[in-house]
Amino acid sequence: MNDQAQFFVGWGTLSLINAGLAQSKNRSGLLWWIISLLLGPLATFLIVVLDRVGPPAG
Image 1 (cartoon, rainbow, N blue to C red):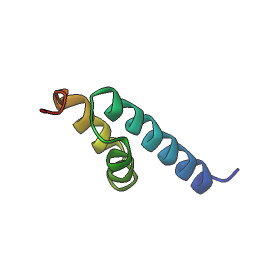
Image 2 (image 1 turned 90 degrees about the horizontal axis):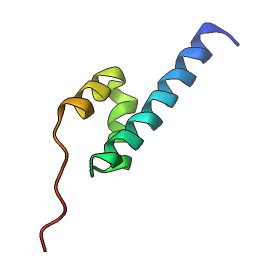
Image 3 (image 1 turned 180 degrees about the vertical axis):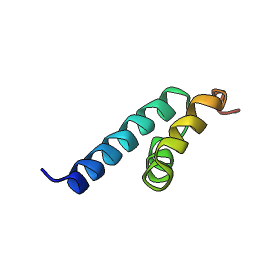
Image 4 (image 1 turned 30 degrees about the vertical axis):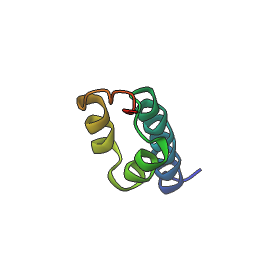
C-alpha cells in the first residue's frame, strides 16, 4: 500500500473514532464524522475539550 493510501485510511479511521467519541458525549456522531473528515486531528481535540451535552429538555 502506498503512502497516500495509508494516509487516507488513517484519516478515515480517525473520523470513525471521533464519531464514536462524540456519541459518547451525547453529540451527533454523523455531524462530528463529517467535521472530522474536514478537520481531522483538530476535530479530535475539539471533541475532547468540549463538555458533555446534557439530555434534551422535554
